[in-house]
Image 1 (tube, rainbow, N blue to C red):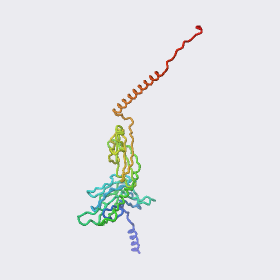
Image 2 (cartoon, rainbow, N blue to C red):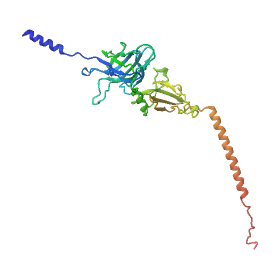
Image 3 (cartoon, rainbow, N blue to C red):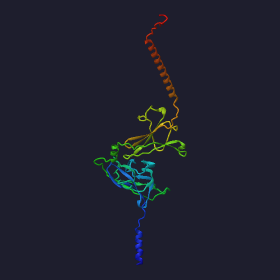
Image 4 (cartoon, rainbow, N blue to C red):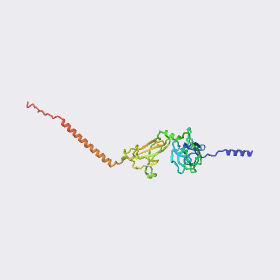
Length: 342
């Protein structure tokens, strides 16, 4: 009886499931591609909801075989609003790196939302086309997470989470299909919606950027995702010389935060967000410094114009008075008869 009781206790203890680690994986985990076909896969994060695990940051390194080609990245469906390192494809080293996070952490699927709300980013891979010579084409390609990949708990201490990563395998058929499959290309072509509206926030901090003014901005694009931001600073003396909407306007690629070149705050600052399809939204920050000095050439031109106008008005007024006098008839003076004369 004693041994039976001990066996029952041991059995119960062995049935206790240990806390699961956070899991990074690529969905779908396997896919078959004809030569030249493209597929969009999602990088997803699972957490142990039962234990209350929350992840607030992931530093990811994805490696891939030379038999598969990454062609694009989309953040349109990402749960990460903050990107310390925007995802980048390093083709030379066959790596995709990213570092992002979410305030208060990701603690599991949002209740009541039927969608998969655990997407960090989407990757578009393409199977290489047929090549002449070089032997038989590879029949498979593997995409996996490097050991450098880390996740951090939302505990305020930056504690590394126990992380499990899964590998994805692509099967590569040796022939071209009846029709090239490229759902991502079709999605980009059909996207006519601009990125979401956003505003520019003017900031200044004695501990950042040498106490210079800078702007902060952020937006999303729920269709194909953002391709980047561009900025232009239009000084008052340059107004209407090129127009920010002109093809020749000097837009520069940028990211948030952006340190203003014009620290006098006399310029109009515009930032445009572009999505993968080329749609754009432009946010504007008007000049903040109202007491700026007007350029000397502008003052001289204004003074000359005013002088000319005054002279013209004076001459016209003089001619008008003279014309009125010439047209006015002469007055006839009649003698006044008094009573004495009568």
